[in-house]
Image 1 (cartoon, rainbow, N blue to C red):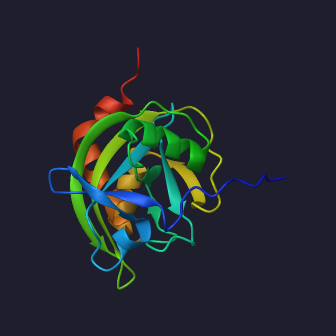
Image 2: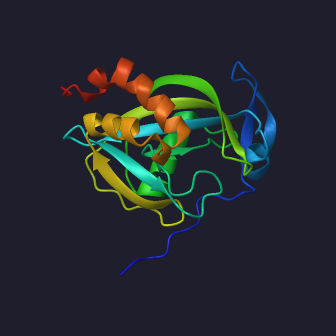
Image 3: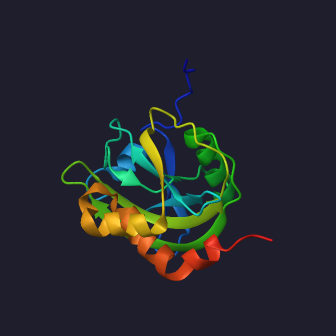
Length: 189
């Protein structure tokens, strides 16, 4: 038996517009931020690892206007006006995956990616990682499927079939793999 879950995002949700230095310059609806070439806005991505060192991947819902059914990192979204990024990461992981985590900031970067003529991502993205030891309960409006994958297997899949993955996952995974993965996977304590 499945229980209904509240809708967690909408095209009318206000995003935080930023300049190249990540300074807030206004707010605009999510839909407007992603139309055409897109407008630069603040976002975040988190990579969740289980105790076995596997990464949680999600397949985006077919309802997503951009990159539907593409495989992506564990969770990505946008902070709300006045919301600290770490609080936004925790909130969104709970909303999408019903998991709790302690996000650790890795780095931030800016990117632009167009999805044909359907719109674009133009984000200043804060990237996080966390360890978690629960099984997700995916929100059906946000996530079509999920799976745990070893870092080596993900790197191989991206090299073999890059068209199956979101552009931000590919960009972020290269930096994480090269600069952060060893530290993330170190046993705690």
